Length: 317
DNA sequence: TATTACGTCGTG
DNA sequence: CACGACGTAATA
Figure 1: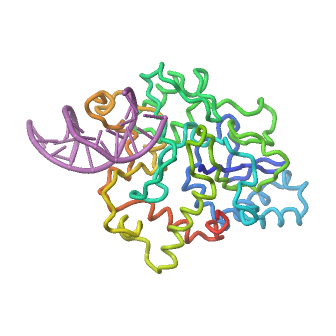
Figure 2: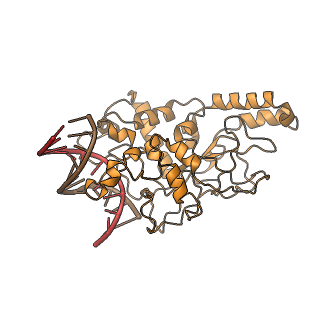
């Protein structure tokens, strides 16, 4: 699944939390999404309506209240299926990454692997099933790659430099899909800050992971920690519930800056020595994998979900 | 089967 | 420690 922040604000400029960047909304970060608590959301709305009286004028008080009071996942408890047609929504601008959602030792098959973009592999087949066309005139251009080649560039920086074409012509307001690759949401109105978890079309039957499946995976892990009364700070094996689990390769977290980088730098030792080194680009090496096994981020991830004010986890399920 | 990249080990 | 080489798990 993917986290998609829907920045939709009827008849008014976007709220402060999501500045308008129609050319490329960029990556807001899972952490940014998840830590958009109800309180922050309320504050965002309040500030917005307070500071932009002109924009807020058309909004009656009842509408404002109703809008702020809208839960983050308004339809989630009605059905396990995604209530909005965002199946091919893109967030990272690449195929879904095999990220560590369920824990470092909890292997899930069927999740698509990342499609690393190597600037030296121009002839390599690039899947077109993602929502953002990865054509030569898109963000895979040598220019974009070169721009991202700077060493201490964050993933977000890298994404922001990518050439995401506007989803609507300049001057128009995007009322439908906010990201360039997101199809219009039709008549469905979602409050700003909504996090939509979607599945992706990744080939026929290639993924057995559904939106609800993944959501429940996260929910169950978090809930288990909560119900067991543990601090969720145990070892990965403990998190997995089996200390005797055979040692497996850890997977990249998918959310740290290096993980969010899309391209190999091409100049680091790992890139230059790829044939024999078998190592990922130094600037794409997951921060979590650099650490010794045992101190993992998914602890914080699930902790955030579990203890988030406003019950985001509840809505996510 | 080919590719990617994690884990480990030897070396300096 | 960093680095390179290698085995090999995971995936396309």
